[in-house]
Length: 114
Length: 110
Image (cartoon, rainbow over all chains, first blue to last red; front, side, top):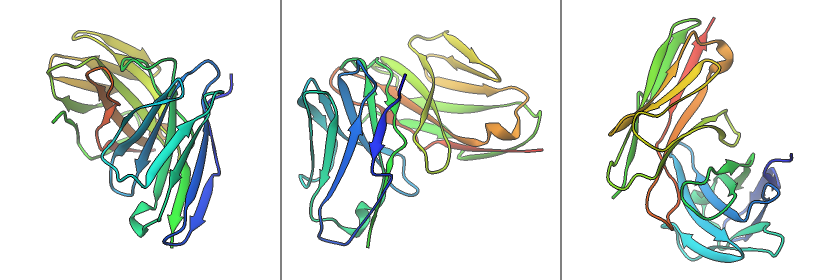
């Protein structure tokens, strides 16, 4: 069974540009979560989508946004990139939207902002 | 504010030297406690989920336990390939995402 996939693996942008990151969940999973892991910091929760709806968002500015498509894949958009947005962005999926469902992570997208 | 604290931050072991990693969490309202392993530059790999105090789960050289206020990840006779960062995460009320600790970086030398 294929795991969570993310693309691209690496992304290099300059300050002020926009970045789009993509995630495909495990087949049968309806919930997708996005996390940011900056150097020296733990995983910080960004966004949670379930059944196409945004269910919750973490303490990040509105320039971090996303969506979930009918096939449950998801996209994370970061507008007006800042240097401190450089991080590993991780996507996870789970069977449903309950907090006891195990989240399975993808390999991540390394975003570098110059 | 719900918190998850892991200790130690870093642990160096000799091959075969058993030890334990600690994860302390905000007790009130815990719904599940998760352990993950993360290799450098990669996504976390799921290891265990624990739901209630007294629960234990094992996988190869790893055993996770949960008490009323903390969780332990015991590593028995570790090998160099066990070197990684081990992350603990807690889930609380419905509608919230996992809260992660900062992790314990384990280095096992032969």
